[in-house]
Length: 90
Length: 282
Ligand SMILES: Cc1ncc(C[n+]2csc(CCOP(=O)(O)OP(=O)(O)O)c2C)c(N)n1
Ligand code: SF4
Ligand code: SF4
Ligand code: SF4
Image (cartoon, rainbow over all chains, first blue to last red; front, side, top):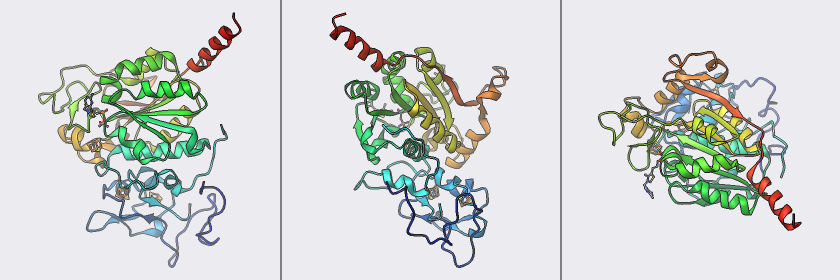
C-alpha cells in the first residue's frame, strides 16, 4: 500500500512532522491538492473549514485563498464526499 | 488477518482503495452524505491493516448501495434488501473474510427488514453500515421506515402519519452485539466507530445519519448539504450526556456514540463447534 514508507514527492522542508506545527509560507506548494475534475462544488469544505482558507471560484469550487491559515486539521478532506482533497504534506 | 491498528494515515490513502478504471466522480448528487461515509469507511478499513482481498463489501439497491461499485474490494451488488442474506452466505462459506454490508434505510428496514432482524439475532460476524437519510433517495423521495412522523416525502405529501423505526433500538432488541450511531458531520467519530465495528467479533451495526438534501432536505425545507450537515451537528447529543436527559429533552435529537456492546457467542463459531461435535460422533 502506498500509505506506508516515506513520501518521495515532498522534500523534508515541505513535509513537516505530523507533531510539528504546520506553517505555510510564500513559495511553498499549496497546502492541499484539489481534484477539480472530481469536485462537484458542494461547498462542504468551504463551509466547514475552521480557518476559512477557501473562497469559491465562479463555479463554486474551492480555491485556497488563505493558505497561510491552513493548519492541516484534516476536516476538509475527511468531509469531501468526492475524495477530491488531499495534501502532500500529510 | 492483520489486526494491528494503524495510527498514522496519509490524506491521500482513500485513492488507494478506488476500483481501477471505474469512472469517478460518483453518481451521487453534489454534497450527498453517502460520499462522506465512503470516505470514512475507506479510512477505517485502512487502519485495520487488512488487505483488499480480505474484505467483502455487499450491498443491495439504492443510492447508498452503489458504494461497492467504486471500491476495490470483493464486491457483491445484490437485489434490493437482500444484501445481508448474501453476506451471511459468504461469511458462512468463507469465515476468514471480513464481510461488510452497506445499506440504506429503505433497503435495510423496509424490503430487507426480515433479513436485518435475523442477521442481528444470529449475531453473525458482519459489519453493517446503515446510511440513514430518512427517505428513498434513488427512486425519488418516497417515505421509508425511518421517515420521521410528520415529515414530508413524496408518498407522505400531507406529512407522515406513521411512526418511525429507530434502527439502533431494533438491532439491540434483535440481538446485535455492537450498535453505534453517528452522523456525516462527525466524520472522525464515524471512522472510529466503523473501525471498532470491524474489530468486533459479532454483528455490528453502525448507523450513520446522512444527508439527502435533494429529496429529504428539499421536501422538509432543510436546505442544502451544508445546512443539513450543520443541523446534524446542532441536534446531536453524545450518549454519555443523553443518559441524564429526559425523553422530552431528547425529542428530535440524534444520540451519537457507541450505544451497545456485548461480548457473546458468534454464529460461525458456534456452528463450527456443532460441526466438530457431530464429526466426532458425539
Ligand atoms: C424488488 C425491488 N423493489 C423496489 C425497487 C425500487 N427501489 C430501488 S432503490 C429503492 C429505495 C432505496 O432507498 P434506501 O435504501 O433508503 O437508499 P437511498 O437511495 O436513500 O440511499 C427502491 C424502493 C427495486 N429496485 N427492487
Ligand atoms: S467538499 Fe469536495 S466536492 Fe465539495 S466543494 Fe469541497 S472539494 Fe469540491
Ligand atoms: S486542512 Fe483544515 S484548516 Fe486546512 S483547509 Fe482543510 S479544513 Fe481548512
Ligand atoms: S438522491 Fe439523495 S441519496 Fe441519492 S445521491 Fe442524491 S442526495 Fe444522495
